[in-house]
Length: 160
Ligand code: UDP
Ligand code: MG
Image (cartoon, rainbow, N blue to C red; front, top):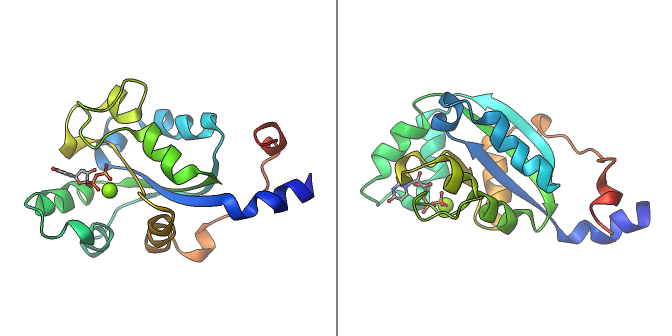
């Protein structure tokens, strides 16, 4: 299987997925991780983490001028989050589809936000919006030693 794995490497992306404090408090951690696992993506980083204010502000720096920014920072730093790095072909856009629209009332049923949330300010999960931001955010939230490169035995049954 090795030649096939090498050939697909260039399409492989990384995305940063985070279960926000409401997802942790509401006991949705297993449910949310399951959705990415069952889809067929590979988990390469995972931790429960109490986010410092400075990191939340850096992560959401593009939203600094928005009126909801202070509340967003309070929300993200209010209690632990679950930080995850996921890898796969097309994982960035696909994860955004699995997550659903920012406003959970507009998110399709079947998506995480569509099934599990009702308000933008409590939308349970974050997903990077581009491959570049995937790399940037994984770099922000993880130390190098916290990430694992590993071969998934199911891969030949997921990717032809
Ligand atoms: N957010 C909010 N109010 C808004 C818009 C966004 O509280 O009117 C929060 C919400 O938690 C959202 C996050 O800011 O997930 C980042 O906003 P973005 O537009 O990047 O949405 P996302 O990429 O998370 O779907
Ligand atoms: Mg965003």
